[in-house]
Image (cartoon, rainbow, N blue to C red):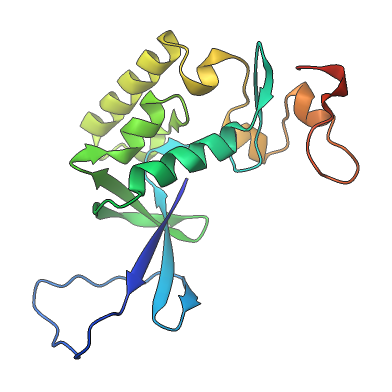
Length: 182
C-alpha cells in the first residue's frame, strides 16, 4: 500500500535548519510549484492493488479501490507520524504510520482490507503479533475481503485472478457482469 506524503513549502521567510530535523533520500514528484509528493510503502502488510476485485454473495466489488479509499479517509485532515524502516520495496521507502496514535497498517488489516506480511516484521515481533491478531479478528468478523472470495495481493500481482476478473472486457473497462458474480 502506498502512502503519499505531501510536503508544502509555504513559509514566507526561509528558515534555518535545526538539529532535530530528519532527512532521508526518496523518489519524489512535483504536484505544483511548491508541493511535492513522496511515496512510502506501509511496512508489514500487503493490500489489494487498486484495480483488484473481490467477490461476495452480492457479486464483485473493487476491494483494491476500497483499500485506497479507506486509507485516504484515515489520512484526511490528520497529522501522521511516519517512522522510516530500513530498506525499500518496489524502489520506495518503507515506513510505519500512525494516525492519532493508532497504527494505520493494523487498522487496514482489521478492516479486512490488507493482509499481514510478517516476514518483513522479524525485527518487530510485537507488531507482527498485533497484525496477525487483527487479521484473525477481521477474518472471524468477515470484514472487508473476508466476506467472500479474494486473491492474496502478491498472487494477484503475479497474474492470478478471480473468475469475475477473468471476464474483463477487451476494452479493459472492467469486468463483464452479464454472467453475474464469480
